[in-house]
Image (cartoon, rainbow, N blue to C red; front, side):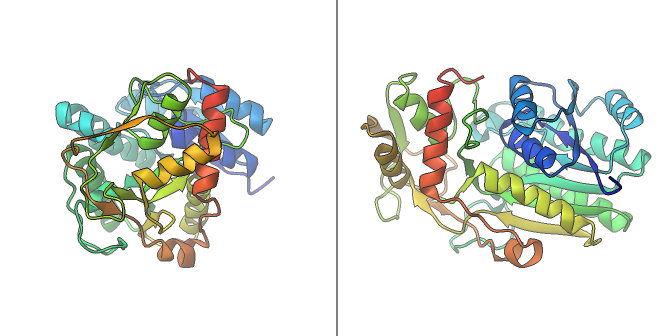
Length: 339
């Protein structure tokens, strides 16, 4: 029993958070979740508990509320923190930038202050490939310059800098900055998955909602990119592979690595139409789509060099595009209206 850890997961009711909570519980950790449910649903956590056959502890709080966080750290004996809580829509971030900076940047500062007060200094941070901005060189490596093109990406870039400065000021901190590529898919059971509010910003839930009849047709933003079929190319990663990457990062922090940065992706790029074709073959129906104008801020192609995570975390993806679309479709069919 001695090595059972208690992990605080901020934003644990969200898409990636819920899948990570499940992996943590299955690996015999205790899990404490803080989530304000602004973009998530507590039902995801009930299902995580059912799948794991174990319970977790839930606080409905905002990470910007320092008193609430102090109560969590006082009540629970936390060993380390995985920090997902934040706002994450690129388009929305250009409309309400202050919300993004307040939640993502200030919220992280409040969290780190509470951690420091209670001597909890192991942190895994949910960053993003958007910090790289537009790069002509692919695949993207961790030492490439950063230069995000929108407030969402810039908020992630700022938090990375805050955390590096924190570690430089106090070497007892160990921090993993995980730059995700495009998480898709769902748990095999179809019990938990991606449940976006309103019209999805991301390709796969958009496709599944067209397939299930919720949306009329898919909009493909631009077919004049310099790619094999003219549509944008992205590195899609199965959410279960991504969740497991967080457990690998926690193990790494036990070795006192300081502040380390890893890309989590497959290293393969698929175009919008590649994903659509794979989905069509899995669900056995044609997905109606129309080509519309490019979206401002969209890059031509974006995929990871994930070799550092493989060598230093002993982590690599095991699930391919077919798994991603099969599991997404299974989740959507079982949950046509989400949670």
